[in-house]
Every structure is written in structure tokens, then in C-alpha cells.
Length: 276
Ligand SMILES: [Ca+2]
Image 1 (cartoon, rainbow, N blue to C red):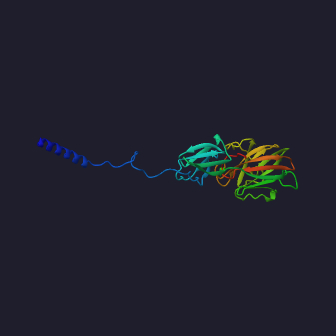
Image 2: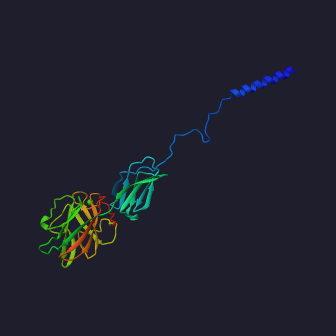
């Protein structure tokens, strides 16, 4: 009886020792080891600055920006409508899908988004009281300086073909038909920006090369897209040395023609001409 009690006691002690020596499990929470805190609590900063350039013969707008901390996606808006979303730091908007006055590039996460604004509105200037080239005593030339830009009505004696980024056209009477004529289509010769004009159009998307002529008949109320092609650099092809714009005929007569000139001066070579 005593021997049996001793055996049982020894077995109990051994079992207790084994249990006591069993290594303990590492302490963890219900979801495993704790991780560093990466909770997003605020929208990211704006992607600033966004670089914009005309590509594909001026048809499309390529946007590039630097990566923004805590941004999960980048949303692009054209005139208030989301037109693209990407995880990359570059995207291209295609002119055939739409042209815009204002593009926003927004860094976005679960808390919201912050945007950089790209203004693509057209510069607007007036050229007034222009006479056709046969009229004495008034001015028949229009000078466009793309550096400013600026537009002015001048005499032929003030035409200076040596000015960079500057083009000239004349209001020309071709046997009773009033025309816009680039300097190169007159005896004055070639300026450093050659202007050529489309037919009368309501389009906001300037057409590709092949749709322009340096002498164009105009009508009251007409609207003509022009291509200002940089003669010293990239002449004859649409590139980022060039500008596009619109000439609208507000009033037309041999002695008193008024034009409004619009220029896409925000992105050189871009064929997007959406008026507000
Ligand atoms: Ca060119």
C-alpha cells in the first residue's frame, strides 16, 4: 500500500516538472505581432509642380509630376470631370477625347485629395480699325509677339522680320475678297513665325498640318484657327516651338476691320483651343 502511494507520488511530481519546464509561447495579440503605425489620417499634399507638354504633333497633353507621400492614386480632372486615374506619376490626355480650359492633377488617398491646377485658358487680345492694304492713311498689318504675348496694328514700315517669336499678317484685298495674309504670302517676305490659317471653323481642337494656308479669305463673324510655325527651328512641322490660336472677325470692312486674337500661350505647340 505504501509502495503504491510512493509510485503515484513520484509520477505526479514528474508530470508537474514536465509541465513546469514546457517552454512558454511568445505573447501576441489576436492579429499577430504588432506592426508600425501607418494609418493615414490626412489627404496627401498636392502634386506640385505638374509639368505639361504638348506631344503627338500637338494633339495630346503629357502631364508629369513627382511622387507625393501617402498618395495612393492620382486623379486627373478636365474642366471638373474626372478623366483619368493612375498610380503612376505621368499620364497623357488625348485631344481626340476632349480638350479643356483647366486640368487638375490630384493626389488621392482614403482621406481625400489635394490638387494642382493647370490653367489652359487662352490669352485674348484685340486688333482693331484695320484697313485693307489698298487704303492710304491707315494701318493694314497685324503684329503678334508671342513672347508676351501681345497683338498690335501697325504700318508696313514698322514690320521687322528680324524679331524672334513674332509673326505678321496683313488684311489684304484680293479683288474685293478680304483675306488674312501671312507676310510670307506678300512681297514683304518671311517673318520668324509663319502664320497660316484654317477655313472658318467652330472647332476647339486645331487640326493637324495640311489644313492651313498662308492666305485665307475671311467673312464677318468668321473664326479661323492659326498655326504660328517657328521658322528658325522646326519649320514645316508642328512641334513645341510653335503656337496655336484663333482669329475671330468681329467686324469686317475695307476701312474698319476688328479682330479678336486668342492664343494658347500656356503650353507651346498644344492644339487645344477651348474658349471659356
Ligand atoms: Ca514648327
